[in-house]
Length: 349
Image (cartoon, rainbow, N blue to C red; front, side, top):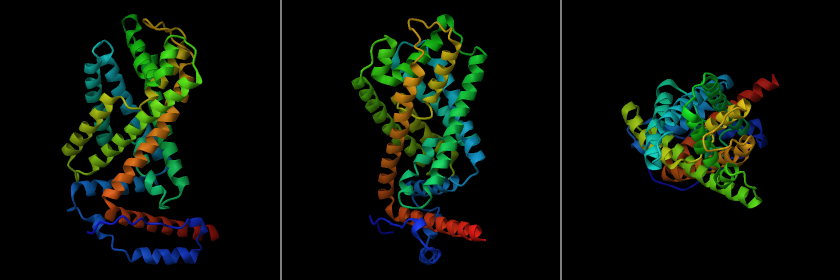
């Protein structure tokens, strides 16, 4: 198949009449899409095609299924973070702690692979295609919102039960101290240091921290999208999928990049520490304003950074798989137009 860099451009569906939609459907139905169903294509192309189609179909799942999928993923990632916390909180060697973090984090991905679940960051892989007019933005954003709400709820559910059961208990409250410091304060850069020492926070501190978090989140978006596509490129070989995920997730864990879902683990712990109001941390003073700073300085920039990172890697991958990308875009557009026409017909009845 000859490579081309020609982009598909489509008009906004709202501006099209029913007859114009029918005309475009006829043109798109003449395209040969059989290449998209060929299992003999190279692994990297298979991964791109399969990821595109899985996420495209996933956008149309019921809102309940979106939410529950996000909730399950939130619980699985909470298991991983709790295991990481217990395994590393008493280790002074940061390099060893990072390596353990990377390898233990693989567990959450394996649970999702076998038991199901979905992350907001998975849907962000599809964001580049949205600018092509292959789906309503309202459908995409609604799916993102419900799966993200599920992610947040799942993590909150796990942390609430674990906190109330005194699961974070340790000598001198060292475990909670390390979670608060490593996953909370240290994830906020300069602002975290200011909160740790109860120092004044300047506007420059805020902008520098947001820039640092944003940059880290962009890198995270790149890695997560590569992991998603890589795990789909193995043509059903589950062992190979785990190996691909393991390689990339270890990089993510060791790098400590900002993930808009995973970072909610610290946010929920901080919420319960604030409500508890009786936690005496070892060598640290808990700041009751930490949560609000964490949302502003960490969560919001992480969402934007993950989106930008996903957009960048999606663009690069689409160029690399240009011929198949054009077919995928046209096929998605065809399905979108058919659905739009069906909705208009039902509305007019």
